[in-house]
Structure formats: C-alpha cells, structure tokens
Image (cartoon, rainbow, N blue to C red):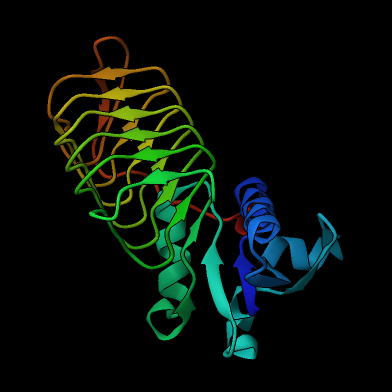
Length: 223
C-alpha cells in the first residue's frame, strides 16, 4: 500500500478521496495521508475523516508519498502545479474500477478518471487531466494537460481538447478541436472548432467571450 496526499481540499479534492476509497474497496492500494490546502489547513482539522496536514508549500514534507491534484478549475490546477514545482513530485494516476478502457489508450501521470467513464480505443489522455463520472470518449480522442471533463460529457471520435480547458456537464463535442484555455458551457453542443481562450455555450454552441481569461485564484487568496 502506497501513501498518497491530495492537493486541494475543496469539492473536487473530496471527490478524489472518495474515488481512492472506491479503488481500495476493490483492491487496497492507497493510504490517504490527508489534504494539503492553504485555506483548509487554516480553518479545518479534518475533511471526510482525513486530516488537513499542511498548506500547498508543505509538499516537501511528504517527498516519499505520491500526490494527486484536486481542483475544479483547470487554470488553478496548472497554477498550483507550477507553484509547488510539480515536476519534482511523484504523481499517482487514479482510475475507478468501474471504468471501461481499452489497452490501446495512453494515459499520463496525475490523471483522474471517475466512475463509469467509457474510453474506447486509441485515446490520448495527457498529464493531470480530470475525467469525471459517466464521460464517453470516442476513438482517437485527445485531451491535453490540466483539462477537466465534467460529468456526462460525450466527445466524438477524433475530437481534441486543448490545454487547461473546462468542458461543462452534459456537453457534446463533435470531432472538432477545442483550443487551449477554453470553456464549454454545460449542455452545449459544439460542432465547430473553438479558438483558444474562448467561452462557448448553447445548441449549437456560440462564442460568448474571447480573450485571455482573468487570473484564477484559490479560496485562500480570495479570503
């Protein structure tokens, strides 16, 4: 059994803890040491029964453990990764035992794939991608680093999701490219290429905003 630390104690970090519990129920693999989170460490002792063991900068205290990121904002995920010098850490990859995934798929480090997701063939899931529950990826789908695919999303075969994108729940993505740092609204139907730094929504999806996004900030920074 390997020690693991969850970086981020918000809603998504807590879902990661639940996923680890689910994995352990099938085959005991992980010992959750606790959460690292600036805000939670200053306000809470435990979350879901696991201790808040430090702030983000305390990763060095757990150098022998594996880590997993648990943030619901792709740009915040990338920001925290860079701040903690993530390239020097050991990263876990967590896949629910209920996931259907063909051996031809390529899965990076720090990836999380939630319950009842279905990855068909020849997909490429790059580092630190979060694929939520009930997601369906067709053949040869590619998802770049730090992107978050929300529940019940379907991406047609050949679809490509850029870096640090957020795909809202129940969205449908045709075999098109979603540019880096873009957001697709919930229940949207995307049938055309989306340029980088875009916010799109609707059926069919239309551009609501385009341009460099505002800086993502953590809860501790907001407070």
